View 1 (tube, rainbow, N blue to C red):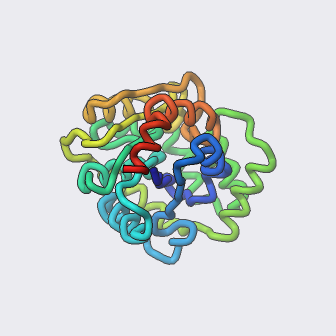
View 2 (view 1 turned 90 degrees about the vertical axis):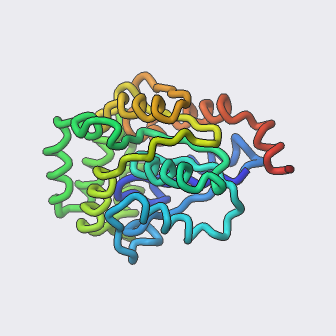
Length: 252
């Protein structure tokens, strides 16, 4: 099966690090692709839309070369895009995985913990991009950050900077998103961490309840689960999307 990975707020495909390659090694029959949302990465020349629907439509257009249906894996805001895609164009989606995501099914103070509102505003106004990336890593990860990872993220921002206006538009789009009351027609899994310091894990609980799907919770990782514990994520995919089923899907 072909899977599409969609990153979150103001992040691009390069911020996945080596997780796509880890996935390819763990599931060699499957194929893993990435996409950049407007305003980020290879799509940074496009203005970020102010709705998740428009972001989803953009991702659909630029990945038309990939075979449908796709497995969708979305992190944070990318999870909203993946969810909107799966609920509104179910024929395009074979499987759905939402990581550290949220929606207007949950209260605003759970979607972004109030204690983080001031730090996030400081980041938006921080002129030094290297310091800003260090601050983002410190907020989204609960693990010690290596100098190598910090340098990688700093390099990404210097080479393909995200404009402040695009970040604000993405924040607005995320704040407004409320999924339709539908149950996905494809296998769906919601993943989060009890110790996420940005988004309360109960936002994922609310999503899983609405979608009538399983919820798995990491005991101590941060918001950026692929960065903090990528092997745990791979194990969840292995458990909920067995390899034999994926092989069958690709041969049918």
